[in-house]
Image (cartoon, rainbow, N blue to C red; front, side):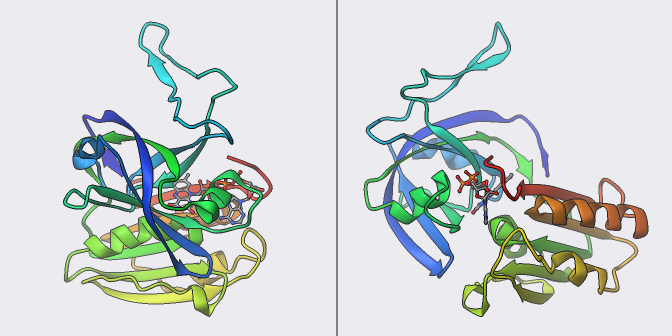
Length: 258
Ligand SMILES: Cc1cc2nc3c(=O)[nH]c(=O)nc-3n(C[C@H](O)[C@H](O)[C@H](O)COP(=O)(O)OP(=O)(O)OC[C@H]3O[C@@H](n4cnc5c(N)ncnc54)[C@H](O)[C@@H]3O)c2cc1C
């Protein structure tokens, strides 16, 4: 993703509504006084969510010390838990942004926050705003994601121009977790199922079965670290994808908190 002239946005937001898109996916809509600050943000870019600890009723943001060139964290007693998510959408008429959460149990802060969230629940959101391009314009796309990458891949698909084409491989828990994703491009969708995310992923094997285009191409991979490593090596070394043609990011690591 190429970006330029980014300015920081930080907002204390409250949940307006929430919906289970599928059994393992929750969409949460949020609003707040300075929601208009998000008007220049790029949908599909990553954000940071700040989850307040129990009993803390406001979001204490870190601030950047420009002299020391480093982030200063709030006192530990009020410091929120920070996780990386995707800016899934914005509607300035309803004054809402929304974020999609892959649900993976009650033990992890972000997943359990989304499960517990009700109207009025508090969340801090920080991200950059400013001009930016989420993906390059080419003829052939390869989009590969596990549940955590569905938001970014969906935004790319929703914005692909008519006339482009590609393959999209997404791994989710089960057939009930398949989502509706709209696109004007001619995309061949492959949904694969794995009820143990982070183990036994079929994403790399599915990509290796494809006959890939050799030019005018771009691939975006967003999944668990081991899958991303395997696919980055495969596409770079065996399929000669250049750095401009491939973006591959570990969205999470099995067994590690962010
Ligand atoms: C650029 C970027 C954008 C992202 N966008 C999104 C997004 O829009 N939606 C989204 O759901 N995620 C997204 N993620 C992934 C998300 O940041 C991680 O899944 C994060 O670990 C979730 O935080 P947590 O507090 O729930 O779990 P953590 O406290 O970080 O982890 C606790 C445990 O849960 C495991 N774990 C973490 N995620 C999963 C999972 N999905 N399935 C199974 N086990 C898991 C960890 O390995 C660890 O053992 C994104 C990540 C990046 C880098």
